[in-house]
Image (tube, rainbow, N blue to C red; front, side, top):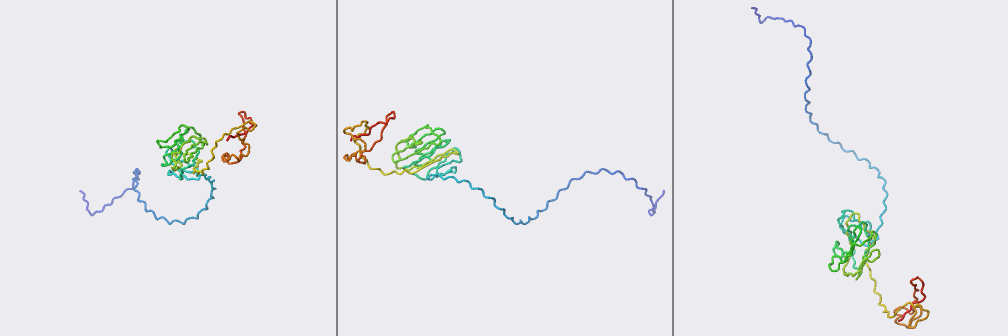
Length: 297
C-alpha cells in the first residue's frame, strides 16, 4: 500500500473554466419600506407692508325722498312688523294672519277720525278705543267684500251692530264724536247717528291689521273745537206764505223791502227794520210763479 508522507508536496493542475451558465430568473421585488416622518414646517416670514388703498368709486345718485304725510298726530305700536310709509298711513310687513295693533298717541273726548277703506282686507278692524287698545268701543270690521259696524262695543247695555254692509276700496269713513252725539259716515252718507254714551271718556284711534301688505292710508285724527253758543232767537209766532196775487192782502205784510219799524217783536226776530226780498219760486212745470212772500204776524 502506498502511503503518503504528510510532508510531501503534490501539485494538481487546474483545468480551464467552463462556460457560464444561464442567469437565473430575477426574484420578486420586495415591499416598499415605510416613509419617514415629514419634517417640521419652518416659521412663516414677516407680513409685508399693506399696499396703498385704491380710490373710492363714484357715489351713486340719491333716490327721491318720500313725501311726508299730512297727519297732525302720532302713531305708536309695539309690533315690529308695522311700518309707517307716511305720517298718515300704516303698513303691515310680516307675520301673516297674526294681528298687529296700532293706536294714536293723542286722545280726545270730542273728535273727528277719518280713514280710507283698505284694499283686499281680511278681518281688519279700524275704530276708536277708550280703554284697552285691543278692545274697540266704536269700530268698522272690514272683510274681503262686506263690513260690520260695532257701536258701544263690549257694553252689554248699549252695544249695537250693523252687519253685512257693502263697501268699496277707497271709500272714506268718518267717526264724529260730539258731546252728546256719535255719527258714522261713508263718503259723507250717514250710516249711523246716535247718542254718545261716554261723554266724559277720551278716545284714541286704533287699528287691528292681520294680513301682510295691508295698507291703511289717508288717516286723519283731530280734536273738534266747539264754538260758543249763540244768543237765543226770538220765537216766531206768525205765519209766512207765498202769495201770487197782485194786491196787498189785508192783515198781511208783503216781503218786499218795506219798513216795519213799528213791529218791534218782528224787527227783533228778523234783526232788521225791513222785510227782506224773498226769491221767486217755480211750479212743478218749472215755470216762474209771479208773486212774493207775505207774512201775518
